[in-house]
Length: 136
Length: 136
Image (cartoon, each protein chain N blue to C red):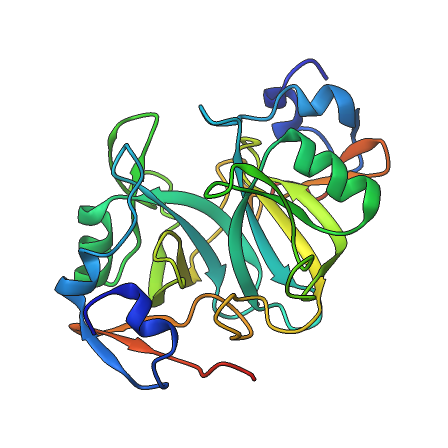
């Protein structure tokens, strides 16, 4: 396995070293890749945030999800302020290694608005409708 | 409702015009926003791709998901080549209006590798393991 392309037709169970694979990840110009957090228990998509290589490595090492905050330009150990941590269940890359899917055990609401998830702005016809109240 | 911030504490059911809301979306420097496709039937996260304003509008108007292909720098009406279309069930924005969650009726495999979804590269310990075979 010398490239990402080799994995496309590889049989299920084929392995490649993580350190090698991380060299194949398509980080953007800011060194980031989008990461989707999905609730392990419910399947709900909770949020989308960004990771750099260090965030990926810390997430895998500690078992707690760490993002990179674009506004603060710093690692963001989710829950350090709010207490609403995300325990890592699994971390998967997509076919092009330019997106990550996290399965997480979410403690409390995932959204900074205190809603269970961030995707509460629902397009209905010619309007966008707020769908869901803050939990607290 | 004069800004996205006003919607954060708004009650469920609060509405804003779609055309106005689209002016609040945080497109990146390339005019794009990441869009997550989730299978309506199974809840599986299928893929992540990108949309510009025109892709969002065409998706909403036609009821069939249209992305913007970064490699081809053109609208990408998913399934035009493969037949593996995505019928739109719902389109939601997140709290910061910098990500989209699509609920879709996926026809055939979502991934260009003919797997049902794109997130088949699973980190396990110090390895990345291919999880899942092409469908065909």
